Image (cartoon, rainbow, N blue to C red; front, side):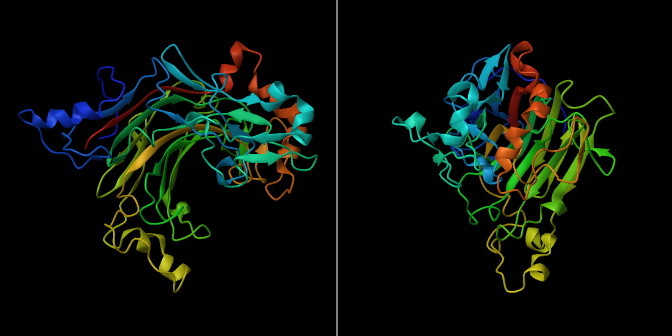
Length: 383
């Protein structure tokens, strides 16, 4: 059932959930944890209320890769970009030029190959571990953070709730989502992706007269046999706030129930979308046989929920720009989008337009926290 639950403060409670199976009255859950063992139905199996930034729980990604969308941020482990305060996690953007100088963007070299295990580059794709800047292809002009539980917590099926406040600022792209731990059905998107919430920081970004900026949250499943065939449009839902009451104004509960029969998404207890793929599974639901004759079904040996019948981990991040998520046709109330998704120098175009978007981040006000993705807590219950 979607909705907030009152529970005690716990940091990582998978061990508690397994041990509680020994207690009288434990009803086994369909939820399975990467650590194994029996889980009691209704048990709180993961909880972080961010009294501290627990680096045993959250691994920072260190990469220039841009999430496959040539986004404009680099991901670091740095307390300027990720920190806890007042029992909240802040993921806050910053400028690369503040650290290295502006000339570095067009002439420097960024090498993220660290010497210690905690400093290792986590994603080499898209020149993610080392890049050289030039006037056409600038180095990533923004610093940010992406945190994940791949080394500490994975699960299959459960009820997830992320209480968060979205950032305010043009071209900011916050997200809370899940990725597969083992890629049991192959590389993305064959093994799936679950986006619990993602949004855009623009206060007045309109597409066909609708605000697709801070007043809208989207929930999406990504699935398909290969990169060029992703049926996410058939598993995407949106919820909009009242005008002027965007998701950047206050905290909201972003929720998901993930079961062996269906997945449903909700916000503040209201269901916004549900998917039951039926006995034909996501292969038939996506219509792939008609769209790609001759391509094999990568989920033919899974359950009807495949690829969403495996262990996934949690991801929290704040991206910026890129060449996919912000439509070129959208109208921005603060001025036009300074780059095109088809531009061969999108990062440079974005950076050259900073006189327009940078003031909307208000980095010089209250330590720039209005531009941060703020997470009050992340919790997972067994179903």
